[in-house]
Length: 403
Picture 1 (cartoon, rainbow, N blue to C red):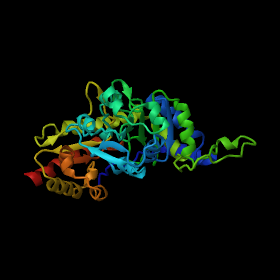
Picture 2: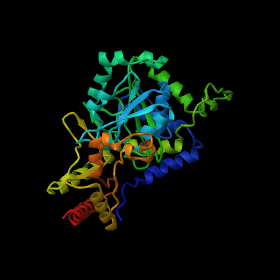
Picture 3: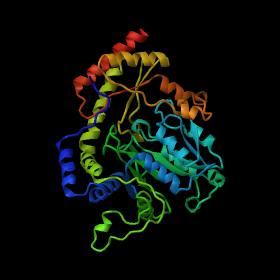
Picture 4: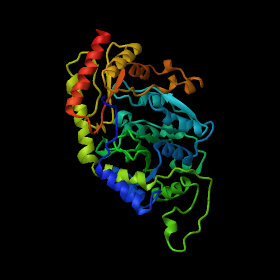
């Protein structure tokens, strides 16, 4: 059986975790701080705050910006539930828009059409690790016409003076856009370190702060308090002799990243550019070459003159295929020992959002991309021989179902 995306856990990671366990710092401590600094240097952003999930990062930034009941947040219909759920948690309205045909990313045209005076945030999603067109998104929110439409309610909104761009960069650490890494491309980017991500900490995420006109160090300090129950000193600060006393300055949240998780991330980040990304790129290239001769295959795009993906997913699409046929193809592939997936079931198809009045017919490109997509295994320990087996297994399954 070839799994879909198991983590690469080797002795380096085991040793680093054991070192953490022996150190006595198993919650947020020195390694989490080291990981934050390393991520800041890697991404080129102003400041990084590590948390227990990317979901926590998205929600806390919406709350920091004052998103509330009646506000609108624009996002693609083609994404995982976390992107939209955090909007609902804040009492705001998710405004889904359609996506592009080729890269699955949010349509800039549809995004522009969806902006109203209630729009407070736009949440682009870097699908599969391919960056969205941030130059156009940033130009749009900074245009005079859109800024005039913006209705600021909070101190932060008045200071920024426009819609905030909160990038869901869960898939895209290490990706490039116009010579910059993901994390430094817009106001705020949030990265995921979940177990199936390119760079994992088992669970975890990071907020990359890049807000213009703000003191991002000050925002970091305030968010560190908000994400630790509103406590004005963390455990590390309280180790200073006589510095035990602390205060609760707000009703905060429990979102902090422990050192055990950060220790995994430190090892992963140190070898990310030299080992992980090259291996994932090689896997995707072998898939591209293997399916090139198949007339039914629509290959994903990983690189353009302006940007390069992080190679998080290999989203294969099948021409002239119905959703039912795609599901039958997946069944055949699975029976022959290969685990595959679908990224994603668009959110307007999910019961919770469907019951709130969203209609998949309003997002025809997302619907079409979903119906014909199969995500293939991509992980560090996948061998060239296994990739060939996946290619052959998928090809045989397509032939069996479509003829």
